[in-house]
Image (cartoon, rainbow, N blue to C red; front, side):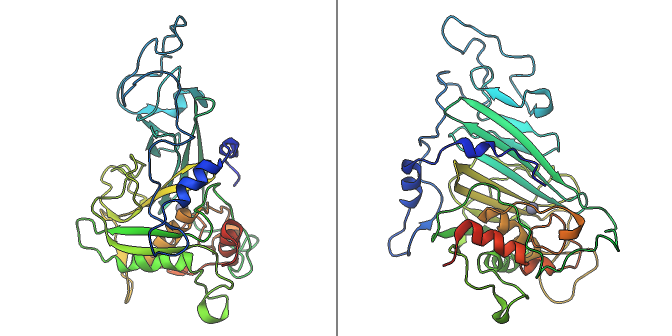
Length: 365
Ligand SMILES: [Zn+2]
């Protein structure tokens, strides 16, 4: 389950970055309301000296003067680039990937950020568990690195020897490596999509995660509360920055969660969440639930084959706050397990490990 090298941790969090993020406090909104980060240029911005290279443009010989390196064969000028054809670390001077769409070996796609940020794309699938693609853009070394992770959940969960632990006793969690500032309020807006599906399940799900809702403690919440909160700020003007393939697009500096017809995604994709970060600071997150070809359950009795909006949104909100998947058949009762069954609302309440992860990230309020 530790599929990632923790390479992104190399990027130092400078005081300047922290100040930029904390600086987005809205007047009267309490200690740090985060809408999304304010500007495109930060200390982590990539300035590889390759000149004004636009998205989708490959400049042969764009490297240092006199060196004139030719781009490698895999560095094709158009379309989607496959990470399986690339080295694990790509020097921007060799192939400027910024603004290009890449596809990881697990099929997850993302646009390589051109603003110096890094990203991680999460997909939740009905079968095959969860999948992640991380793109680490390191402005200091001028390198872009890729890593993928797939958390497979055995079909027909094995019974007996590896029965899943009780969620209230299972303390397992995994952190992704970036988080919002402690004490901040993450402002987000909903995107209603095309079909008029209810958004209240999404709103409840986001609130469940940040509020540490659980069946394990008296009062329905773990205590103390983690020192972060979320606030629904109404309807978004634009769709989440998630592509039709359920990959990550180009961020727009607002946190948008909602319904999206991800028409190019595999039929097993339920939801996708993208997290853009610099160093260990999360800057923006977007979330989309698949409104095309999936049946959703948002209250009342569950129609067979429908998925709980609230449960899936709670899980995705875990990614928003910085939690990763916890794989393995014995952890399937946790909200951050990368699996959800039809008509199962269990993920909507946190297990011990989900809460422990939030406390590791944010401490007590
Ligand atoms: Zn997930």
